[in-house]
Length: 299
Ligand code: GDP
Image (tube, rainbow, N blue to C red; front, side, top):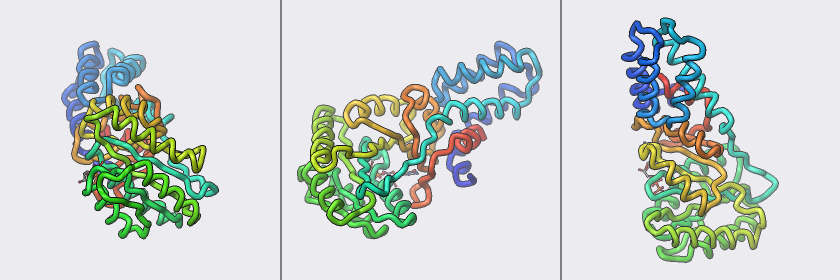
């Protein structure tokens, strides 16, 4: 929890200082409620969650003196309740061999890093892992994945820059099936500039995987960078359409005051949140906990 709390310190500083300045020895009246609602919207929680929070507070405490601590606790409760339905661990079906996880997201969101961290986590659980360098557009992405492969002892299926991503995914799944690998994690390209190409490429990757396993991919994770704030909402819309997203990973929650956007995402899309990233290290990918996140966010 300490790691999470430190990671979210910029987001919690914003909320905590805002709440303190609104509720320094004041009653809960229309004015303070409105100020609180504005604070929550500016902290990226979204209009719906902001309204829900102030309504819950008003119901219990209207026209009473409230302490900063009480407001924070009420806020944490509403946030935790909003997020609780989406707290879903990523479950690897060990019978599949391989369980196929497709990882999508715009360039720079933290896809490759997340794949590396996931590989390390699965390896630590005693699972065999194979990585497929499906972002064939960027030499750096292929190299990064190879470094993670070496670090975690996971074989990496890679080809030269410009190779066909679907062909590579097909070969990787074939090899993982032949070797009885537990988990195959497939990286994908994240060029949002050309939505049609991106769509065609991801659709083709899924199509060829299904030739070998009709249920593949078993997870389709979207990696989102928390620092983009409200833009994350647009990214979910695009990728939900092109990649059939089944769950979210939110990275870079350290170093941003926009962590509240996870609440807005949960409200709008009702997608499971599997992991959050609070740093660049291997241990900085944490399973998502609604309660711990809410507490760390509010400060
Ligand atoms: P990709 O283009 O989506 O594959 O993104 P990368 O995995 O290459 O990540 C882009 C940058 O973000 C790298 O410098 C990562 O180290 C960094 N990064 C990824 N996740 C996190 C995180 O949770 N916190 C921080 N601070 N940096 C991260």
